[in-house]
Image (tube, rainbow, N blue to C red):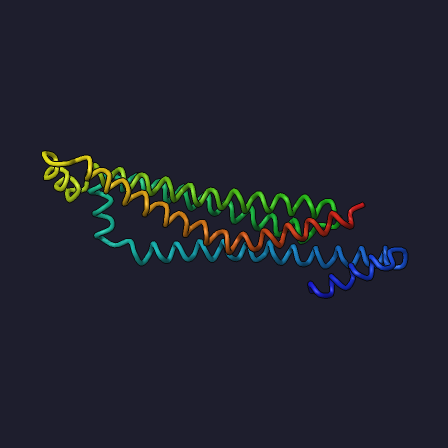
Length: 213
């Protein structure tokens, strides 16, 4: 499809008067079809991501995990966060579906351009939400672990009369590195998957601008 679109644009540039009506319409149809396909992929990937995390939770949440949450006094909070997170993710998936339906039924260049911009913003908000949710959960777990984990408290008691500052420096650096690496991996995942699709949408938008005059 990309090669055919390039050939049409080249023919249009070489002889704009002969190809103006037909080629503009054909280019629009190709960009329209390609944009619809990209948004469909965004929808499918977001659903697959939801299913993946649900499966991971299903197979990793056991009795020991629940006891750990109780020990950290965050079991009730995590239940609330889980429900809220699923609700928000479902809202994003619904918005992806609405964007897909809107782009699929769009019949003008300007409407398609607006739909592309709206879709890109929705994906950006979705990525930032997921990264922010990870950061919030990580901070809650770290604070609770430092306060309630008996192993950390035991080490802190043993170092109380020696060098507690060194202990906190090691703890802080460890959590900082763990947080940075994990958040970076999440960001890289979203950058590779959704970023690739968003760049293709942006390319479609730029091509539409060239024929919208």
